[in-house]
Length: 111
Length: 114
Image (cartoon, rainbow over the protein chains, first blue to last red):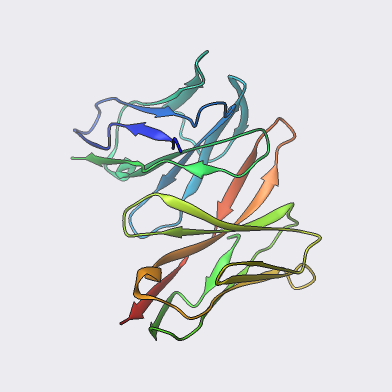
């Protein structure tokens, strides 16, 4: 069965640079979620989209923005990167209100 | 304050033994879910228990939920070396806009020794 696809899998950036992470949900899933997991930490909810509209917002910094496109894929844009942004970024998808299925994550390292 | 505190933080057992992990949370929930994560990898959904359920089974997994105590437990029976991973509980809060956010606990790191 198709799973959530995230790209890139690894990304290395310098401080103050920008990064764009992409997420391709499971086919026919209409909801996408983004989570951030720092080293040794639990995942923290950032933001979600349902049918291309933002549906919920968590602890997402103002430097980050995200959107869901007409084909349901989503992108997380991160600007003015800081050392503390180094983390695993997970995307999950679901049918409306259903079980969230997580992608393999993008490991972002900010130097 | 933290939702989904887990206990113990780390657990080491022999293969074949049972492993029990506990989770406590602070606010009301729609459901509680358990996820597994192998080191540095994605989260795998294990089981969901709704707020009106008390116990649920799935293969070697047994989950209980006590909403009066705001706690849940995950029991893995007859553990295997392949069960070595971190286990997280997550509470679901629905936004009413078609989605819900998961609030994860700190996780229990389980090591199963062959």
